[in-house]
View (tube, rainbow, N blue to C red):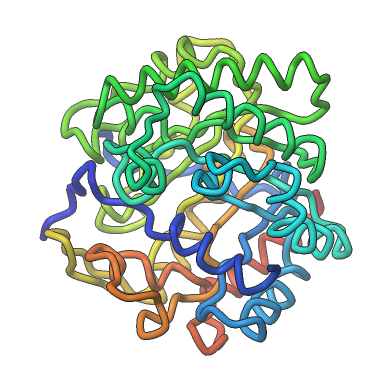
Length: 366
């Protein structure tokens, strides 16, 4: 069985999330985890990614998960084509995001916004729209557009959390030169937010499997010290974790899977901002793994004590409902089958065992 995923894999979820938003508006061995807690510190939530790109499914997706959530996620690459054509960030947000965020707010949800700086399908490359335009995040003018957009997100959408770069350790492993530009841009944007008196948390996310030598690079645990040093502004560590690429069962995930990332540095709050475990095995793009609905439910049970161990702020799963590949814009990415069954309901909204496990955890007092 092949489990090591290449650097050029990508959470197709990121591209699909952007696809889904438009139609709506506009190594260690495993160990025993700590005893289950009776309460939780972490808010729980999802993104609005629907199974098919239509308004009915988009609304049904949000309406189905929102009663079992306290936080909503928007995770996307920037709309570079419009931004570099001179469309203002405020106009783009009013057109594409304000209606969605108002709908989330009407349901009492907090908001996490991740402005992803690199290609969601390949961490070693520039964002796809920048490549198409022949532009680069290394350009001062492009970095300024990003900074302006982040400030507009703060002002117009008022999220509680703003992510300024995603999976920084994986970007560094894939493309050091690109990483240098990401570092420069994110630090400048963080300074802008500070000067604008942003009242929420500015953060980056790290890829947990990469930190453990399971993804992109094969080797021993390396941690995230470089990310902490290079993005010293981060007020929170966002966790991206798809452990099925490194472990055969959820019980194989080490008990210190999250807490060890804080070793040797001042503690910071943590939030799982993306991740999951499929309910069906798959073979695609040189990767093979097995799974089942029961295994997915065990993953949900396993993550809870890991979050408890770091007194986490949140747990976000981008995909609540499975993606229907037949409805996905063609041609589909070759790695899409690796991600289409991460949802807790299938593409027809039939619940899986993982949903009951999630609901049990959601019922804990917070």
